[in-house]
Length: 190
Image (tube, helix red, strand yellow):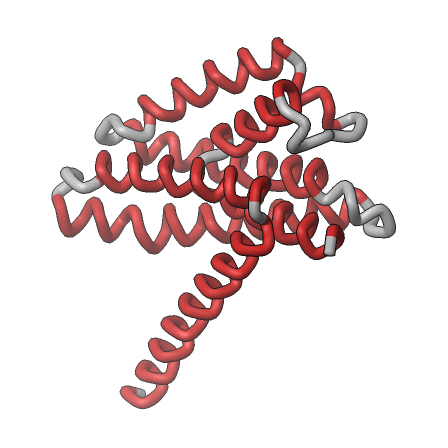
């Protein structure tokens, strides 16, 4: 059961990093430093350093403000295209510590794919539609919602990873069905 919980936790944290790189990193760092809920093995225990926590808070504030400012949010998304997958890789590798037989590189690749996938859907499929349909007015509420989802997902991934894993699985199936239906509709048109 611990193995399954570790896997779900790793996937949940990586998915959360696809929405906001710094929220799940900060959640992991704070919980590892101030509670017994999470124990990070070296070298990942560096995340719980006061200096790293301080840096994560500063980066989170910068990203929070940049993502809410018109025009700046698009530049931020370009920068985050590189940052979020790296954060996902770090979170996956750090939280998948129960997977002792899995090579750390494989864990990091998994984290890159999960966080990168979530970020891609967000920045390519969702945000441009919100910007186009609301004239940019919907970007701030959507950004706040993304931050809230990232925070909740991060906490659930650590506190109740099995439920988080089932939620992520359900969302993945739902999105897969949407794409399958769209591709089927496109085929019938042609």
